[in-house]
Length: 85
Image (cartoon, rainbow, N blue to C red; front, side, top):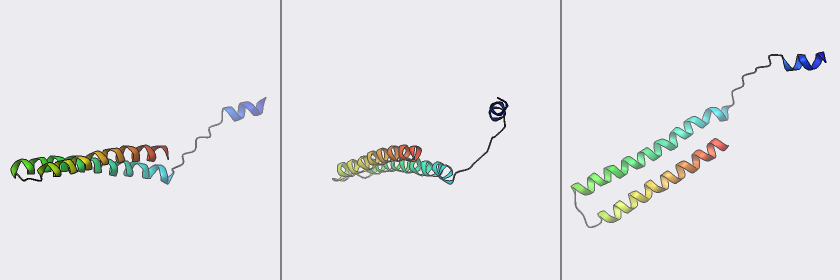
């Protein structure tokens, strides 16, 4: 019985740092920065299209919104993969 109490009430707190856990945070920040950059590109193109009227402005808007959508999907998927890994 004494052995069980000794095992239960001993302080066995060990702190271990894993390199993989440390690198998860910068990777998530990079993915969020990429989404932010895509959003800023959308705003920049909207201002440019309003300033300069061209025939291909509709195509440019579609391409930029497609870029934003892909960046958001890949960013969210990448964040889930990083957090689960």
